[in-house]
Image (cartoon, rainbow, N blue to C red; front, side, top):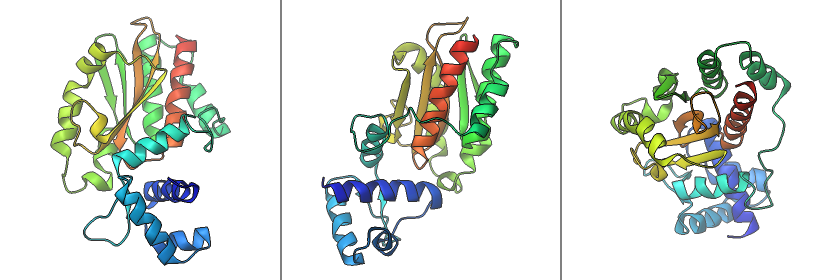
Length: 238
């Protein structure tokens, strides 16, 4: 992949997260200062490489799971050309998290508050393990997303949620931040969802988890930063 193709892919992913419709060549041509024909040629190459796909009803392109994985790897610092996750959150966001996550509450209440705050900030479904139970909040957020407005994939999402708690207990992801994109999810792989979870130590377990489940179309940099910071604050508070 060339540098320009990488930049085009990143632009498509970030724009698609915002507008929820396929991104066309005219929009990108203005951004990159080249002709739409040049952008279309680059899009074709990216499609052949498996990073983009073209819905039948549109001339624009949307990212594939492979495209999202490339982008997430960039965010996580596996490539040097994209900023990592160590950027500070905005003051408003930082205050919102710190105001709800503190040592004065009971551990269960603190964890639930953290999940509810993630739901408010990301508009995704929030989740956390509390002992042997899985706490969920914001299910309506998930199903109000355009991807699920017609009921498409809802059964697969339900399958994923039904099996999520035993899967996390069995697999116990060891990274501070783990991202499972679309088909990478071991259960409900065709649900069109991405799971972003942070591991933290709590009175219930050294392998406690908090995170969000949302459509593959989401602002990964922002959401990953939020989930990572929330896990850090929880571990400190608990």
